Image 1 (cartoon, rainbow, N blue to C red):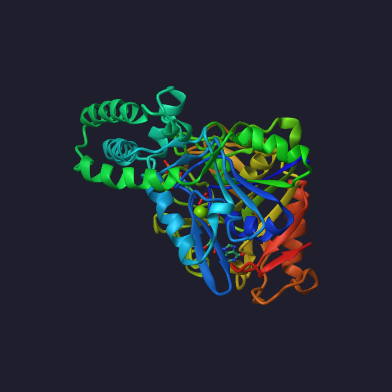
Image 2 (cartoon, rainbow, N blue to C red):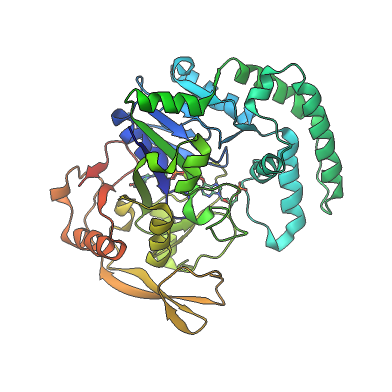
Length: 423
Ligand code: GDP
Ligand code: IMO
Ligand code: MG
């Protein structure tokens, strides 16, 4: 069986967690392929909200296996907190959670390095979630990292010490001085490592290969969004992993010709948290309305998300880079009440009209060109069928499908599992 992918097409927080949870009943295995606790994936069902950071969003289903793939970076302390929350919900994760031996570990000093690096950047800061993501992936590509499988070796603590000592000397090198008590952080870290070690570590690429051979269905869950991709995102205001479809191949060990459907998720408008260019960003009442109605606050950091109109130039680019086969439009309910909606269909780039996503989208280079469409006034949140959707929303959907040349197969009309319409 081919492996299906689900990933975000914007700057993250599109609603990936919700849709993975909705789709899990169709899959045997849910596998996260990149990112780490910088992610915050929200699931809502039975009147309760759950936020996952590292653990795949299929964990609340009894019969699905959940794999943390080799492309993921794990902070044992945050992971422990996630497990505790699952225990409180009586989720028996021991039988349904597997961890790749090749996943890398975020050390306390990686988090400190992240903080020192950001503090030194001043105004040019990335707006990182400060979870140590960048420094951990740097150690991975620099071939210095500590992997989950290393925890099974007798000398891993010596390797830890050497790396943490090196990090401390690097922290001292930064202009910005940060305060920390490493001994205290290490007590917490080693306790969390013991919990992590009580879970099942596996050679995950072999596991996936065998599962495919046995006809099991697998859904790969992405984190962040395509515009935060280390190669294709708005560099340097990006994360440190490949968030796009190719990242699922390297992050799980799945060959490109084994990928099936690519589900691309986007909001009916756009949000971004952290620094970096955002051509359709709004600074007016419309943007404030999106933020308020959409409750646009980061699931990991609580920071307010910047809001703006849908950007089809960026979305088309994301569809191309990922080879999206089906689109899922989230949060259409948030736009109810707007008389007209704007959609960016081209950029004025250095004085010229262009339709592709250029190298540099800084505000001094790019001005969005908008097409106006009618809004809808109806409350969508109680709708459960395609036939109930208002005409103006159907027109919006058809307009987007025509522009993007990909069908929209799910329309989400609220945060709850049940508020999902299949087309
Ligand atoms: P993820 O990181 O892609 O999983 O997305 P987040 O969980 O960070 O952010 C999405 C937010 O929107 C969460 O608070 C969800 O509960 C919420 N959400 C998801 N889908 C919808 C929707 O269709 N309508 C509304 N109003 N909220 C939604
Ligand atoms: P999910 O999976 C939204 C953003 C940060 C920052 C930049 C780099 O919930 O969609 P990092 O911590 O990786 O060094 O931060 O990327 N960012 C996200 N924004 N959703 C996310 O994840 C994000 N993960 C990282 O705000 O701008
Ligand atoms: Mg999120």
